Length: 210
Ligand code: GRF
Image (tube, rainbow, N blue to C red):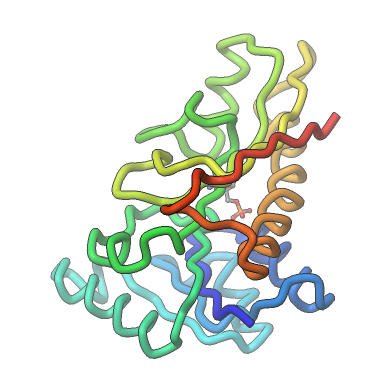
């Protein structure tokens, strides 16, 4: 049984999807910490409703970066975390956390990385850029996290067709559905020790949504 920490800043629909699969008994893990910079976001409201332990870390509570970093490390250590899932966390993880939990941190991104990733590509900006570029395929990517935005080794991708009639909103909706399936699948595989980065090359699988 893996101990999971989820980091989220927004609605938390990916967090909810993973938690839902845990509750159904499909993922051999437990979410024992939910970290956010935003105490009023959907993810935190959901965590409270489900009585999951919460940690709020932001520049108001922790104006000093070292204290912010050590508070997160302490909480992760105390909870004996095996896996960190970034699910719409809008802050860069502190360096010491990335180093300490190398190959144990996953992120989901709403495009086929390395396309439409990196600093500035978040939320609807990703889908707006995809539509503007007139590409015919987009999708979702789960990857290991390193010190740069959207940069670590890719684990799996799910492809979604882009239609000429799509707006960034309609595309975002379809990609988000693909994200929920893909992220739950990869968290499940991680919890079964099927995803190992470091010694081996990361597993790269591509699933087609359409
Ligand atoms: C998702 O699109 C995810 O790919 C990105 O942030 C968004 C979070 O959405 N990293 P939600 O909060 O999980 O609904």
